[in-house]
Length: 117
Image (cartoon, rainbow, N blue to C red):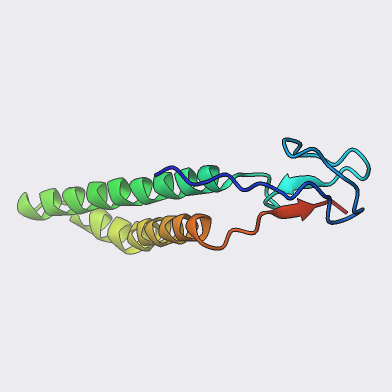
């Protein structure tokens, strides 16, 4: 999904000087246009997609490992239970965190003029 670029109005919000529309840094005060992390909406969205994929792949790996150890009645079953108990919530957290990042990038990521203190 391609997200639209956020453009400023040609004026820095900090020092109120005119800024060219294609500039991302104010020459007068050094403020930057964008999010406070320095990432664009598209970058935040793509990072969220990667987190969701990591969570799904990790969860699938642990589920397959657990199913195989149960099927073969292996001694590794206790290890797979511990992995599922400890790593399962981490995978779910990656999925939820990635979905929240994707949603934030689409709706309410704060794009504005900002300065480091």
